[in-house]
Length: 189
Image (cartoon, rainbow, N blue to C red):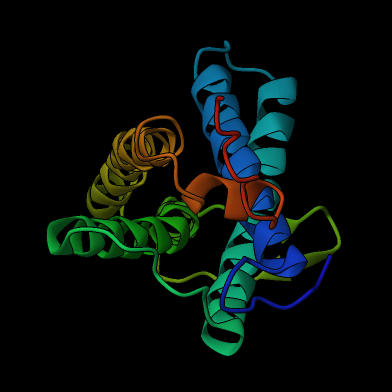
């Protein structure tokens, strides 16, 4: 299994970053939604600190993913109508933008609330802005709505991948799952 992407398939590194981000963002979002339902307590404060540390980790992975995509390239496009190629490009741009916007808006919100930001209690990160409760509400709204927008774009992304796999019967999904091409269909006698 090659580490680098070639003309026919995504490389192992690109696939690993794809699935780490997918699982990480979905899990982090569900974790964030759950922790907001908890009553105030020291445990809730610790959960928020964990949420922030995971978010910073996802930001680092997102930056790595963007850099790797620029360095590694992508497989050749499979034949598709122009509108599908444009839609796929727009969805991928939206996903990359949201992968960055979610943790950055969380960092911004944290700073505007005047809270310290640590990464797994190992080191502090600088505040992105001075404390400002009015702007903190805006930052929180951006953070929250970005997650819901991410979910909507992900539904579209997954739906398109499944359409390619089950209806078009092409290699779009297979190239991201295993990196191998789909076996040629058996011909009936």
